[in-house]
Image (tube, rainbow, N blue to C red; front, side, top):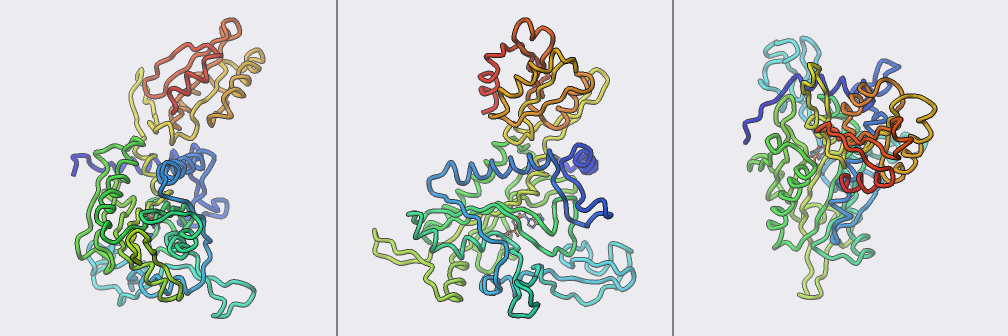
Length: 440
Ligand code: GAP
């Protein structure tokens, strides 16, 4: 593990920046806020979308052996019965009889001491609390109408295994990938968007011949680590931690977590698991459908084994935000800059007329119109140019394009790069090519 250490102050800086600049808002804030739910503002929605796009691009678009899926969020109890979630997807819950605080027993430093009031021996017996949200389909709230909000996207891939196999012409090794919302009634949500009751996941189920599962497991552990690193995450703050035997699910022959050094310490970004044939076998037995594969080359029928890289989109977006945050002293002032990879940056370019004079506006809008179809571009004409550069640095915009009075004469603009603050004079008819070379 690296020599990097957690930075607790960073947490407040990120929460403040998120609110001040419109990345993340507390949900239902005007009603006092709805605990543990968050709304993604104009910049947050772009960052989150870019994280999901980068994942989809690497996991689906750039692969011939993975296809996509968008399964429903509402699902009948049979799915969760077969998956084991109804019986086992629970956390041990204890109540403090002194201060009434509620805690997850498995997350306490000392299982006998309430961290909210420091009382020893004040906990009730632990109760298993199922984390799934239950609701009812249709107008009658009877047991027969009970349905669940999915607590993971993964089961959508397992129950559609035969549909995808029969329609996509894929055969093992192949994967099904999905991005979408999941819901867990977490006992102790917290750390901003790290653990929430409603969140987004990016999961892929990779179906392989049983004999090849260990090799594919190792392949996906490496591939997933590379994804974070290729998007610029600090290697000193990223690690792959293999689960000890006593952490493994009974069906898993190997699980590793991609962990990031958050302001509170190392914590999970993603889990990569070798799940064996557990899921397909469970659903085949419960549904009576065949969920296996007949290999014509070997004349063998087998239940594929599954390697599952399961990441959190919302959690990962926050990790990239924290990782990119930097402060440096420039001319005795502190400059805050988000050194986001350009693929993740909410805006790729900002067009800034030097002054709000009507003479510059038409040309500045002409520049905006010329590039807006290709890159998410901001347009800002208020305040001094220095303040506008600072605003763009703070939200990670890689390039600022300034239209000044010379532009009207020489048909050229000044392009300023975020990290180095270096400036180039670029002819208007070369601007798109200039940016394209740098924003690939
Ligand atoms: N299908 C396997 C699965 O769901 P998981 O480790 O429970 O595995 C995968 O979830 C990822 O989803 C986690 O690594 C995390 O990034 C994200 N995640 C899980 N619970 C979350 C929560 N309450 N809030 C935000 N993200 C969460």
